[in-house]
Every structure is written in C-alpha cells, then in structure tokens.
Image (cartoon, rainbow, N blue to C red; front, top):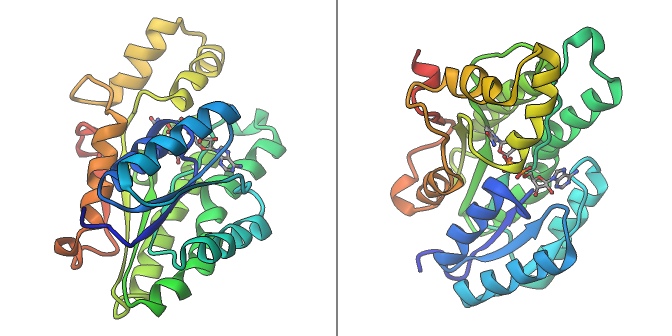
Length: 261
Ligand code: NAD
C-alpha cells in the first residue's frame, strides 16, 4: 500500500481507462476522487468499491472538465475533504470523427476544452498543493495521436499533441519540487470511447463495422489486439512509485507498436 496517505484525483474516471486507473491507485492505498458523468447508482457502487480497496476515503466530484471554475473548485473541495492533492490523472476525454470542413465548431471547442485545456487548469490548481508536501505525480492520458495523426480527427490530434507539450513544460517547471509529470499514450483500447466512434467512422469512410474494427482501428496496431484499460493503468501506477522519480517529461507509449511503425 505504497500510496497510503495520498489523495488522487482521476478525471473522467466513471468509465474506461480512468476507472481502471482509479482502481489501481486505490489498490495501492490512495484516497481517490472519481470524476466524470454517468448513472448515479453505478458511480456510487464504484466509489464504495474504491473505498473498500484503499481503506481510505473515496469521493465523487461531478466537476465538468470543460469549465475552468469547476476544475478549481474540485481541487479546493478535495483539499478540504482529505487535506491534500498528491496525484492527478488528466484523463477525461471525448472524440468526434469528421473531416475538418464538416467538423462542427461546438465539437471542436468541446474537444479542446475537455481533452487539452482541462489538464492545464487542473495542473495550475493542484501543483501548489503538491509543492507544499514536496511530492507529487501528474499523469496525463495521452494517445498514439499525441505522436502521429489520423485523418478526420483534427481536433483530437491537435489536443493530444498539445498535452505532450504541456507535459514537457510542466516537467521542467516542477523538476526540483519532487513532482513528476508524464504522459501515458495508449493505442486503441476497447472502451466506450472507441465503441462510440465506430458509427461515425463507418459513415465518414463508407465502411462496415468489421472493416472499421480490422482495417481502420487494428490496422494501425501491429500486435492486432486492443490494449486493455488495465495495461494502461498499470503504467500510470508505476509512475507513482518512488522508483519512478527520475522519469519526468516522458511520453510513454502503450500502443502495441503503433508508433514504432
Ligand atoms: P470513456 O468514454 O470510457 O471515458 C471517458 C471519461 O471521460 C468518462 O468517465 C466520461 O464521463 C468523462 N468525461 C467526458 N466528458 C467529461 C467532462 N466534460 N467532464 C468530466 N468528465 C468527462 O473513454 P476512454 O477510452 O476510457 O478515454 C479515457 C482517456 O483515454 C481519454 O483521454 C482518451 O482520449 C484516452 N485514450 C483512449 C483510447 C482508446 O482507444 N480508448 C486511446 C488513446 C487515448
């Protein structure tokens, strides 16, 4: 239980990769703040499981990651309830698939706000609390799309590349504070986010569901299998260990070889 006494905020943790990260952190003893949207009873059940696993407080905060004031308020509420914010995982994300000329401006604005700007606002609010205890871990869920592009995902590719720059910049700003800042960059992970983009990709490219799965998604992934949320979460957990204190400013791929090609 190497994270006993630490508090972690995991954005977008009601589902998919974020929920897996919340479970890993709680399993190591951290108090976890769940965040994201979803069914209240399902979220409450997850919160209960996390509290039981960690033996610490588990909280749910409904802050909307597209709203900077709600992000700052979540940090303030967390510190009031637990006394600290030691770990943040910038993970909330959405996707929209369309050529740029057909891309709805409101979807572009939402992707940039939720995927990219939310991380800047959360780091800005949380870093002083980490510095106060001379220890902190900032982990951002990037993507293979932080390193390479795909067509019809202009907003997402832009936002994820932006997160890669933010990771490096804050790693330098916090380098002597006991705070590391890293990104874990998955390839395709089987989660609701991926399932949800299959119909749009079918439409944008005129393909069947099977063709999208095999010829678009797994075509990029040399291992020919989806990454699991657990595999991504395991790396995030490792980055929280003291042995990982020299890993900072890194963008670590968990992509089945996608970006090696
Ligand atoms: P998911 O849809 O299962 O989870 C997304 C989470 O974000 C949910 O908890 C949702 O409620 C939350 N969320 C959405 N909008 C929000 C908002 N405005 N405020 C707060 N929370 C909000 O998706 P996932 O696949 O687990 O994605 C998690 C992260 O992983 C994202 O950043 C995504 O870009 C990244 N990622 C996913 C894949 C993949 O293949 N699934 C690959 C690379 C990167």
